[in-house]
Image (cartoon, rainbow, N blue to C red; front, side):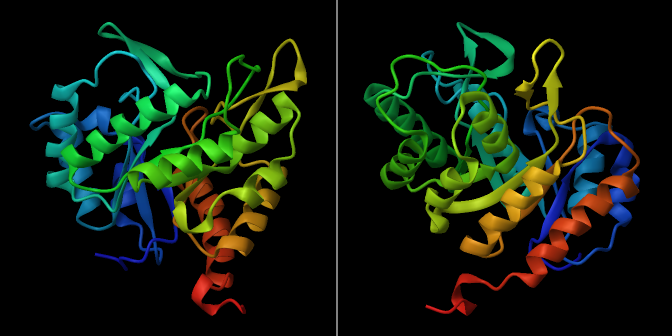
Length: 283
């Protein structure tokens, strides 16, 4: 197995299983949506285990619906815990969103008002998830496309208080911050400057697209393009402040050849390798 130190990694796609298992980059790791592997056997799980034999793997969930109002799916949680025991992931993460209602799952990560009641509700669900999994998880900041009424909390403060209440960590998606800042009209750099450094367990980088009708006025977190220059600049600003963190290149649409994704991954890995850790930074 390659070095256990996580630098930069890639979202693992089935068409890249062989290339991923054979990759020998220092600090390389891969991330999957666990929902695709909640099975007892079969070829997909076999290939995940083959990649895991060579590299650290992270589980990035999309369906716990932590901000939802329906009870957490306990059967799903048990299957997730079983997969975690089988794979021994380096990281486990989920989204600050909801995606299920009365047993129906929606193909999106949906927003909610950041009320004080929502904070208490979501904190309890994160705590329960961590108890079932027997491990700390990281919570990802969402992308926003419109303003919602009923927000009692600024988003960074909301995330920070979830960390304080539950002991969870944060997955800081820099593209989500850029997209949301463009769509809602706030300063992406100022947002990232306020996120507590010691809470960030992982960073995501991805590409976005313009809305077909509104153009640049509405950016879409589409994960179907290379990481934009503005996002790379925000990423450099963030790691300069907090030190290196495991960083993932996400690509879910228009997936290119493995070597093209690897080049983006290498850009992030080079930046991380050049960034001193917090312990090395001057006081």
